[in-house]
Image 1 (cartoon, helix red, strand yellow):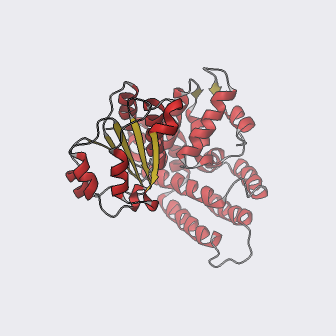
Image 2 (cartoon, rainbow, N blue to C red):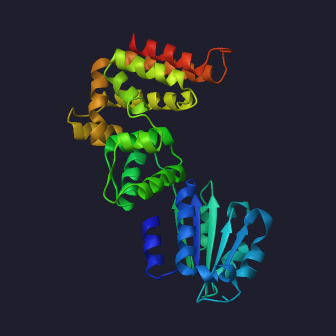
Length: 330
């Protein structure tokens, strides 16, 4: 079951006695836990009917004892078990799940990894499982668009890409920035590059999207202008993020060579990107041969090591980026 359906069911008042939220992406786990608490318990009753327990500080039997209590103020109590990945076994929970306390909603947050399939098989009664998977980098712009729409705002593919490249894959951080924009902007406004620059501080002209476009199109003048800006503002443009983005760029360009068709929609499906971005990758294919791409990827690997101090003791990240982009373009 996906997180939207779990939230929808909770909003309708259809609860499972036990939710087990596990996986690599903490954002969706936290989202479900917070939503469950806010919908099931009134604010006035939270001091009485909400119990937050940390797995590193207690044992599972203490959790079960808490779950067996009855609510004091409302119809249900919520027992939130955070850091559940610290428990070594779940034998007590397996036993409790066979006959859970009907007025308790027990929510386990098990972050950083997937729960063992053997335990899942044993916990097959009265337990709602949700595996929170990390989004791939190419999925984040689409997720941003959906998130923006949920806040009654609009955003273009380009602006979503700029946000994803600058803010990275920390979904909680991205969601927080979108929430702040939703507070400051009228409903149905569009989040443009200008608004992003004004409110978040990401330049509409000097960002990784514009750099990638310039390099793909072999626009030497524009690429150098952006690189010089990055070099002069190293703290705002970490080299590790730029290297990662350029690696993705050339990986996608190489992927164009293996597309079974030159049709944009087929290329988009082959390399796993939104159709909006295909043009730059196709232009990159025209501008770079396979051999050049292999050489560039080797350069990216070399400069990643240099940025970490291997074979480089004094060159700044900004100068490393200038050297790298020169080698890519010449």
